[in-house]
Image (cartoon, rainbow, N blue to C red; front, side, top):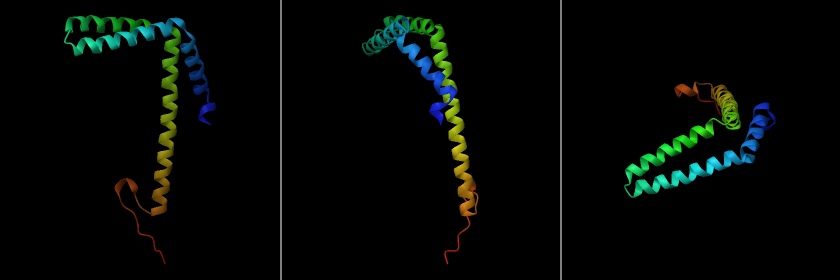
Length: 118
């Protein structure tokens, strides 16, 4: 099944490494703290301080994104999302095709043939 694929296994490993990295967790905490501060600064109309807070958030985010384990984690997220998209598309296509067969029509065009119920 999907949970047993290489993509999901790599995602789980990368997630574990991110969760266990003190540096990564510290940066995430700093970003969250600065985001809360930015919301408060915006609320109170302190736009100059808000601009500085947003710059600090961007700097922290760049630092976080530069960490190899974070890059690996983000790539594994993309890979799993792509896999899930393929599965969802396959299911959707299969269901649509079966509906067309069952109704004798063209679902996407809104046409179906009425079945004889006798």
